[in-house]
Image (cartoon, rainbow, N blue to C red):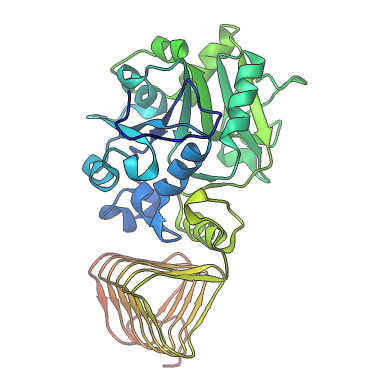
Length: 368
């Protein structure tokens, strides 16, 4: 693939294409993902996918294939040919779910490079993509896998390695993991390995492709580091990831050097006396009333938070409204929902789009 747009790319991506898998339905983030694919949800003011694409571009890679499925048109309508980001974007859509391995195989016809860098579109990461590529080239591996260490690896794919960093096993979500190293969702493939994946059927790269490569004696190399990493699949992680971007804990070339306790976008209104802390984001056209307190909140475009309302570690969807003195903590408010005055929504509550809760309609405490 070539581009009509001249691109002055940094070194590191010569002969490399990137594939980003963005076909998931994002069910764990419902109701937000009823109206938009998860990678397109605003995260520190831009679609989550933009942070990943900016990291790919920073590494000098300009040819990117997006493997789409759910609401595929949203991606192409927003990014077009990718030229605004200095990229050449191509789109391949799954008509039926194919799994991670099947999705990678599904884009094969668009891959012209010998080295293919594959990203899981759910992950917010800070690792230097160029270093992962350098490990791959230095080791001569068939596949290189980015690994990170986590405190509780049981919920992830656990990946033991030997003293040289060569992967020795791949254990998907085991209850007694032998290592804290997990699959971080970034891979470098030789194109020839992708060609070996059986086409036209669902294939799990974690449960089928990697175990078979190991059984056949093929070389899978690990690139392990301690860079920032977060799976953004749950509301809790989405909120924390957004806050980390705003505060500069998670790096993103899409944000430049901008960092602080809050990020208020153009066209938003914040009344005197409102408190915005903890990496809060206020979207375009949103309105924050006097004495409102937002701590680690993600307020989408056009939302309204009335006077004295408290929003902690929560997401308020497009055009939603929180009434005066409402308390919203660890909660997701869907697009266009209306939460009445003094309502209390706590501990994982989810309000579906368009739902209206009357004043005092949901309470956890007895006083009104």
